[in-house]
Every structure is written in C-alpha cells, then in structure tokens.
Image (cartoon, rainbow, N blue to C red; front, side, top):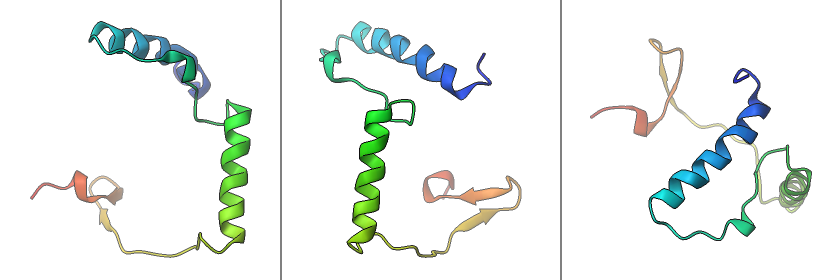
Length: 83
C-alpha cells in the first residue's frame, strides 16, 4: 500500500490531525486541504500562477552551483552538511 504515493495522501492527514490535537493545539481544520495534484482546484491555481509569473518574466531558468556527495550519489544542501 505504501508504495503508492497517492495512498499516503489519504492515510497520514488524519493521523497528523490526531497528533496535533493531542498536543493541545487549537486548529480550524475546516480550511485544511492537500497541496498536490490530487486536489485539482489547488493544482489548477498553482499551474495558472506559475505560468502567469513566467509570462511576466518573474520566473527565469538558471543554473547554480551545488555540492554533490559522491558517497550518497546526490546533491548535498547546506543543512545536510556538518561543520
């Protein structure tokens, strides 16, 4: 079941709500929503927003240097590295 990424989106939100509530936090859950393409309304808004920003020249493709870990076989961000 957990090999399917879509399953995670239905399994964990309820557990997260239980944990947050058990910690005593007061949350208005009426405004909670999933921010992936499983929510077509949110996904459509984000796609529109990003396309609009690109049209306005606010988003540009660029390159930047990054540290690559040969050991892990992936980029290594600042928070991943020890001093």
